[in-house]
Image 1 (cartoon, helix red, strand yellow):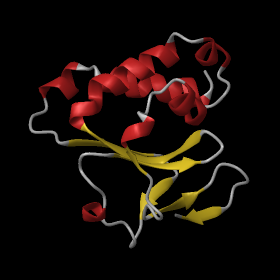
Image 2 (tube, helix red, strand yellow):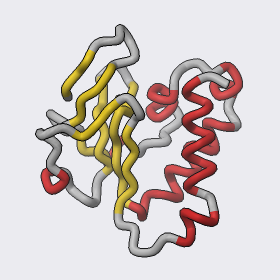
Image 3 (cartoon, one colour):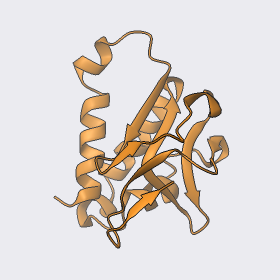
Image 4 (cartoon, one colour):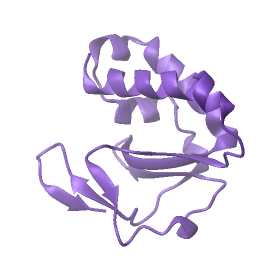
Length: 133
């Protein structure tokens, strides 16, 4: 399985698991890629709690090294991930989940907050250099 379908499968499996459902008082859901870490510029309080926090690239894809969404958006997110899992894109593993977030409306474009800086650093997979965003 390629990276993007694997990521979608893991997200969907966990967010629909009995373990996740047993958790209480969840206000937001955050995801950070394994090659990244929150750096000294990360400031939780600088992001609105009622918006989807994700970097948007004007070429119609989202940067998924870190994103956060309100727990109230979980059903929409899971519906979108499920659409991706059932799509031809998932079967091919191409285009990436970053493109699927946009084109399959997994992330509601009307409800995003595109921060100038996330406060995340790490190894970019392509071309393989350290970035600080």
